[in-house]
Length: 480
Image (tube, rainbow, N blue to C red; front, side, top):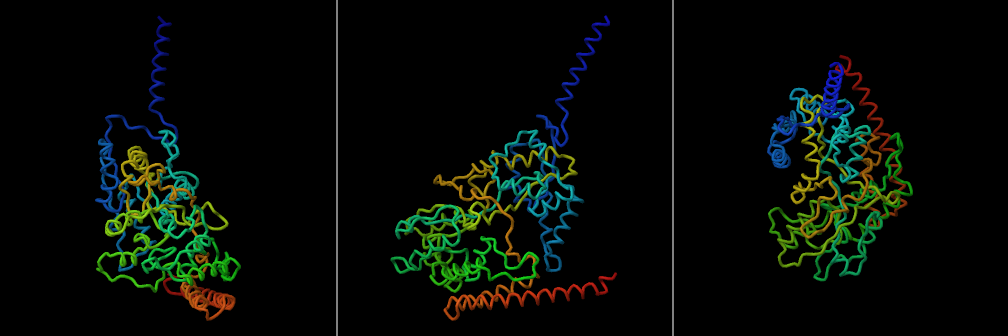
């Protein structure tokens, strides 16, 4: 009898162990929801109606056992006393989270980095591994950004991102016998290509080789190129102006050449009045590329919708054949783009009472099913992080938006100098380079004036900054 007792006891212990292993989780993993388990989550999001339109209805249709409540942060975006403070907003968000205790947090990329460092977010790496959640088809640049800001780990996921690509009118390239652009061109290569187009078409209408969004000035062209080339306007310590290096001179030459050639759209060209009928001429002023009068432009995926709408308006013109290549890149780094950004990161509150249900929401909106459902109804300018999700109605792929890696934010080093120096430098460059463009002075003469003027302006800005800080430290409020 003792023998049978031992065997029975061993069998029972084994069964308990097996059951326990099924329910147990490793550190960081989350107990799965059962088929009939009910749960409720609170999602922090700006705009309740928009949340349900973009995410909520689809998720609740897929997970009817999970109730969703929106903790709306829209009121936090309102300025206080007529002034909006980013610091004040971030503090308001922290207070909101502490009071409302939402399970899912909608964060900006910067907030995501801050909250990760503060220990406010749940590390998703263990549960991603536990659920074998596929991240292979998520744009690598999205994952890299999130890991970089998450100290090497994923504390959130982003269903969408923003990026730009170079749109080109293949019909115009064929008509004028110009070789079309290719991936990873530099600004110099692109603008030289633009200069091969005439400034008027066969009907005597204005034609552009390249159009900037809105309109461009000589200095906006300079800044665009310099940013992409990752040039510095000041030294790393912010004390020395460096805008007369050989690299800067080359940027000035490229920008002045494009400006003089009239290959690009300029700010002083006529703009349509508000309420003007949507004719070909007026549409050309608003968006020359969409009107078929620009060979190339740099824009987000939002332009795709604008092109479609304009071709409905311009019923007398045959729709033109357009294609995409990557945005311009730096001549010394052909793999990294400038325009990549993430607006929204979804993360699980580290203090959530319902972390599994919160993760199920993030997993769904970052997954393949959601991407397929949203592939033909994207928010303006947004792209799905799932790289295999989007093609337009004509089967045109959007690979150009996904090909480049994301790089660090480029500021020309101006973040190292007093803020007033930025506007002073802009004015100085505009004054001197405009004279070069008009032929009044040589580029070498302008560069001498730019270097001495920039350094003097920078020294003055630092002196004023020093005096301002001294006055602040001596004020009664500082001593309280």
